[in-house]
Image (tube, rainbow, N blue to C red; front, top):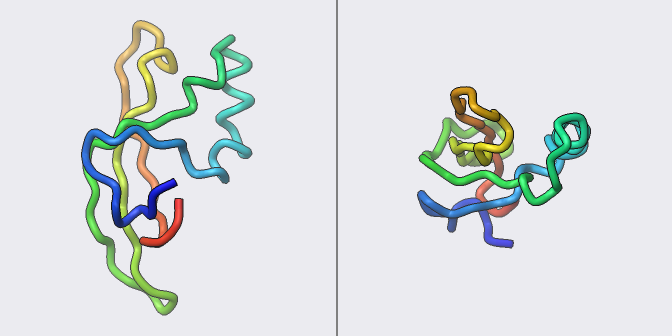
Length: 85
């Protein structure tokens, strides 16, 4: 897996593990979706304001259309340290 700082617009990545464990697996199962829909296509990346522990990379992307059925897609955003994902 690439460090967040190396990601580019258009990359497809796995969601942060905390999101997968908190709600994504459960919601996918409730909707009858396979685990293959646990991905994010990156739309934008920028560096956020650093805190006392260091830099943040802010990522905005979209889950696959299967999550939304025929409805409108909405962005999925998260932040991570530059060397993690």
